[in-house]
Figure 1 (cartoon, rainbow, N blue to C red):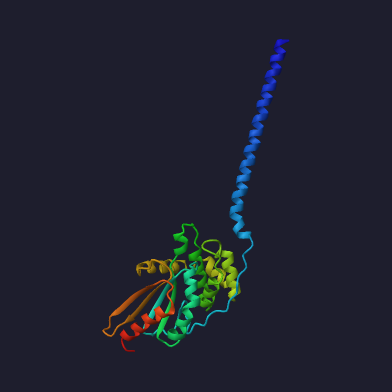
Figure 2: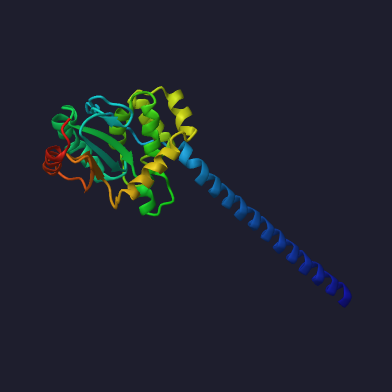
Length: 257
């Protein structure tokens, strides 16, 4: 009788162990499944989540626009803006100061103006691991292939949601491109191929080489009366009066045209 009881106890114990192991396997499988679903969600969600609405704006006029430049290429003063589409001060300059420069100096043939990015400046400096700064700059260059660089430039600035918070995901840039009036097939082919990635990286490298330490910054160059090239870096979203003072001084010192 005692042996029968011992056998029953062992059987019960084995059954308890088996059930415990089975529960453990089920829990383990469930945890792995949940983890896999979570990872899949993180990968898929950016491609399916609703795109925040895009604001449509009328672009500012740009005389003699050519890709990311405007004005007379033979103008005595050359100004290169090093900027970032995620930079609020850069946006302020494009709204508050650039139109006055266009009216007074660019449309009159005194200044040739070029917009260049600073690579992945904002994204890099907030250590997000994202590339929204570069991506927006590439999208603008792709718009330039269709003669709409400056239109895309203005639309991008009008649709900043914040720094690296999804303003310039691939899907949102595509929607901005559509609202800008681009041929989407041509735009997507350009953008997805990273046609202008090297150009954007070079923009950033040239900004650093010019001594840029913040955005926006402006490199003004001209040839003086002695034939020497003079360069001056203007930093920050300065008011029109500052640019006016600098440009007038440069015009006075420049070689006669």
